[in-house]
Amino acid sequence: MTRDPESGKDGSTKNDAATKKDGVTGNVFHGPAPFQLGDRNVQINHIHQAPPQRRPLVLTGAAVTTRHELAAAIRRDWAAARRQFFEGAATAGAPSDGWLGLLSWLRELDGLTAEDLTTQIELIDHRLRDQALPADLKLLHLLGWLDPAGEAVWRGTPVTVEALSEALRIGRIRESGPEWELYRDLCEGGLLDALARFTVLSALRGTQQAWNEVWESWRRLAARIPGLPSEAREWAGSGARGLLLAALLPYPQTTVWLRAACEHVPPPATGEIEWYDWLRERDGGPDTPIGWLVRTDFTAYAAAQAEAMRRQAAADLQNQRMAAVLDHAAALRDRDWADYERRRLSPTARLEAVGRATLWLGAWGAATIPVPWVIWGWAEPDIAATVSWYLVALTLAAYAGWVPQVLRLGAAYRPPLHRVREWAEEARADRGSVRRGLIRAGSVAGAVLILGVLVHDVGVVVTTILVVPLLAVAFHFARIGALHDWADEHRERLRDYRSGRPDAGGIPQSIIQGVRSPSPGVRADAYREFLRQFTGLGHSGQDEGRDNGRRDR
Image (cartoon, rainbow, N blue to C red; front, side, top):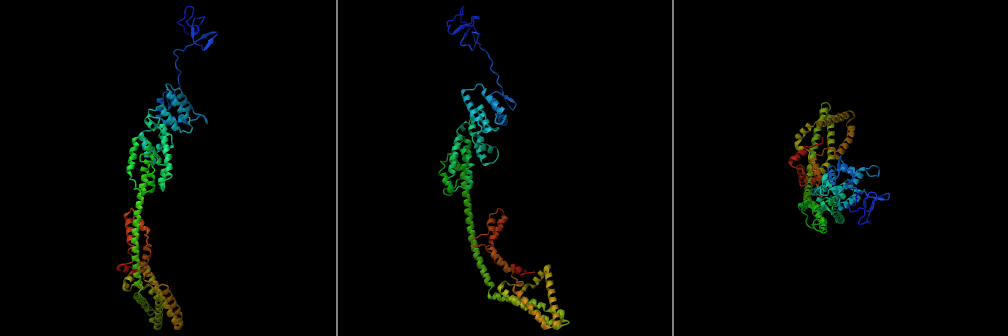
């Protein structure tokens, strides 16, 4: 209580209407009393009253009292701040104690200007209480309000102009790594506006909206591009978004690599890629975001397609040339084969073939004549003579059945008349051939013995009657080709002619794939196979001699 210094002895003042006097103490009170004690006014003035003590906010075991202290704590341990403020819950649907503590602490902050209070209300009501906003984004908005002049941090990692540029340059073409994670978060939306709260990134204000608008414009344009390859169309709906943002960023770091990307791949010539020309006419100019996108990413797609088309055209031209050469080679082979067939089936060649068959079968027939004389001649010369004639008849029957086959083979029938000794040595070196030869010799000896017994026991007439069916059997088997035809060379040439020559205008796939192989050995084999298209019908004398030595064991 205070005494009015201006009161007189009786307590009267110059302004009695505004003041009243305490009749007991003489104290004078000014203004309306907050309460009355009896019928007297009492005024209590709190002079030097201490401000109320605020409860500090505790984060990761440390108490923070100022905006800068809380901002520093968030930068140190992003995950702990997110968990404490925005991820806990006391009960289902109820706010967590961490969130309530943060809200109370924010409301009790001192020294806030009118602008701070306005932005604080915006922060709390439209950012921190937004259930659709991710916890990390809420924390970034909080950090931007607490310390906008400080370092921008996202999920514990500083975000700089260089980091944004690298995320758009590298992250959009990868599927892992910090650049990809930042690029993914940028594409989810909202991050640019939150980063724009910081002074160092204030130039980003409005970039998110501009990015969304140009992205929608690009998607509408991309949907109309005629003939766009599937890979490029897929990129137009995903990876192209990052380059549009890079073109919108107001920083020289992105412009540097955008220009480098434009200069790295030269665009295809006008008229070469139709969809690229269509897109260039509608991209809005080289300095627009879509113009940058077309001159970087889609220039690369167009250049790759143009190069692939040129390679395909070169391959088609090469295939056409090879096809023309192979057609010419096929014509030569056909003519060569026709000449070969004409020589093989000429009357002279067939007559010579019959002569060779006569000599060859006659030699084998003559080789069997001594057998009955060895077996029967010392005791029964008449039986030996009769059986000898039977063997001659069997040889003639086989010869008669074999002549038509020889005529069909013509010059291809080449028994080893001039190399009997060499043939015999080769046959002797083969154990299987020796075994088969012994079986055949034993069969001949057994047949001679049986025929001799029949002549001796039942007479010549009955035995002759029994031999007649054997003559028919020998004729039949010779006619159906039971005898070795000595035409291995002819069969090899025929097989080479039928399989080695492709159809007119066609190239064997083994050659097409082989000439493009990275392996020198495979390419050499392919070119060798290609050269075989020109040859393969003619054989040297050495090959002919070797082939004539082949026989059916």
